[in-house]
Image (cartoon, rainbow, N blue to C red; front, side):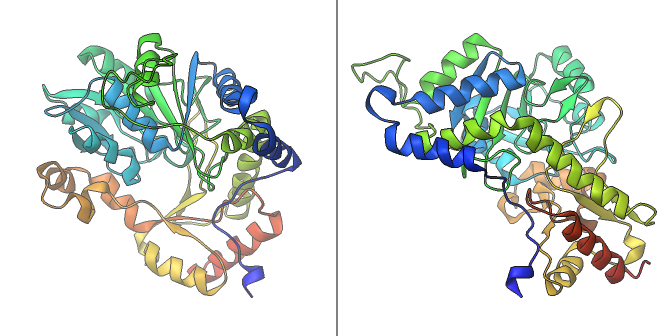
Length: 377
């Protein structure tokens, strides 16, 4: 029955979100116009421990603004992990630069500093690491490379709200970062995003570019350049404010769900779940299992089997260099030969149900079904 179906993702919405959204819809105009976006930005910046937060319609728009504000454009190269969603790399093309696909670490599934070095050229201007599925790469190693070569770090923290590296929260680990508040994410506004930075000059540039090239505070509508329209509406910001006020609860819930999976799948040989190195905190946006090829259950086949049991799932991302979107691009052709870890992991990785409203009984049903499908008692 459809009512028994276990969803892959979804938010936690309480009366607080409903009350804030109702107030924004009824009263967020006239003298209160802009109130909820400002409150959301302030609360989010305080949660992360950064100076500036700018609410946006998506994480993709945040990455686009970051690249544009840094002056990255045609002739420039930006290093991005091969194993991620295309939204991490597409904004590089928006500004006319070239995405260079680097490999990922075997354990964290995030950008590998070692492979970044192999991708550096005189045209490299930035490194764009992705905090995949709530995990984080080795930012100390990435920062060392960036400082050595005069590069900026643009952190794609879309999936990692609440995650940490060496005690610092995701989003505070690069020169600038962007988050997603899509309905599947740990914090949601339905759709939406946030750009964060400690850089005053970069923040000022972002604020001009996000509003059609108007200088902040302009009341005469004198645009100084052709730019973008990237803002978050008040009702969405009101929901986001309620979510960030519940931050610790929501992050703890994600970690609890992962712990249920970890305990239930303990001892299953040939199945590896998300990794959490000692100096990190993983918020496990998507509980992900990578299967040993010896089990002979590639992700597409396993997804079909789970679907037949009323369990939703998603494939681990395909390497970007394998996508038709990048056919014919020289960098993609090189990456297909170079990025052995990404190509080894992707065919055997699957995202398991990770919705915020999951019960322990539902997780048990998923793991029992998974064991039965795989033929593991």
